[in-house]
Length: 303
Length: 256
Image (cartoon, rainbow over all chains, first blue to last red; front, side, top):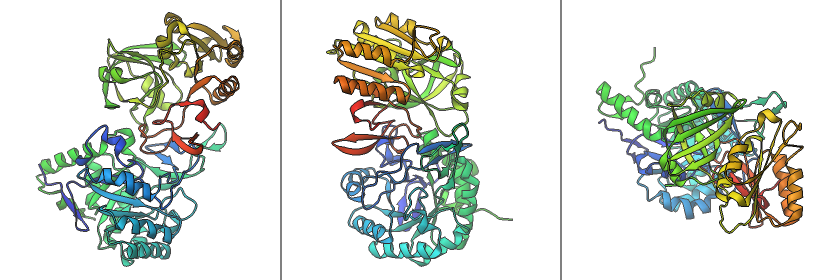
């Protein structure tokens, strides 16, 4: 049994596997299947200062080796999260990453300030949602905006701050450096890649929002590349995600430089995916005689 | 336990119409808790998303479920390749089902095409108290009429082209029944225009009506919020989710 624990920004995780924001709600639905304490952490559904109704349906489209979504940050608002969902999650012996988003830097900062008064372990600031018109990805696609919103949120909270980055940019490493300089304690990447599908019988896009975010195994090699580039560009920890579906994928992502991984679309194929991934990673490490999962972080030997 | 995930044995498979298959699946712990109107979420060999398929039969004694599905695309085509003796990976039973109330004295079940399978467990519960009106494109698409008759329900068959039963849509015989009165509840599953028309008739006649809706779905359990549908709750518009709040909704809650 390898040591699976990792430490990110001073927070101890019993293992490096975290269900990704948006795929896991606030955890209740999956607790029907397994105890949440088996997970390293939980990145909660993206939550905004005020409740949001989200986009019209269809919000989901299938793609080769993946899927598109355009949920549009439907959520009950930060107060509901703090009053109803967070107290429940904090009883589960698992690190809680409260994912927040907003239309303006002020909204993000206000939501973060509310979380600062709670026992939540970390804040994950989403500057990369492709499915909302204001804010969302707009923050994440320019270094100046990314730094500005990070700075505002940084000033509003002492909690460890992870900034979740968009892959829909020319250089994700540049954005990562900007948010590092603005006070981020860690970065997580990648959010979904903007995509589109069209029903050729009707000529209509399948998604009501026309476009949406691509996730699943299709994006995995892109995510590994971006994690590697980012880990080489910043000193703060990187949390890797994008198409991780197996223990081997998670090991690969960590070799590229991730200190932990998040798992999203794989949950829809196999709802036990995060638990299975922990087991598969452990088996790989044991077979290789590697004592700690920490030993593989950034261990890729590039040519 | 509300739902579980596992690999279950297919104990029987039949093709009951062109591109429509019936599976009997041995899954005692699922059969024990499943109710009419719920669905199972089936993993395909090669796709990221599972395929939601409604439950067509619940046999608690045998510990089996029956599902009937149509091959609509590559995912359902893969599921249709499975044979008796194979296992199927299911997350089940999911969703909010139809009301089964022994106090109802007369109910009408309305199935449009592949919306017919979820009517069968209701017919088995309500028996002679049920009238099942089913509509299909043509005679070769007709399914489950013998099963419905065996349950004790009265059946009315309609086809769009008149090649079997009454020529026309299910809404015509239903309007006549609604006119006569005495219906405690209507349960319907089928294409949206059909459901919308039925809901309108029920509203006009003040008949309680439940409809089963479809939407593109990912997690199946209410976590990802992918399968939103517009509803009204407590006088407020609300995006409910077909997988958890539905698939069965009170027709009065749906924003058509």
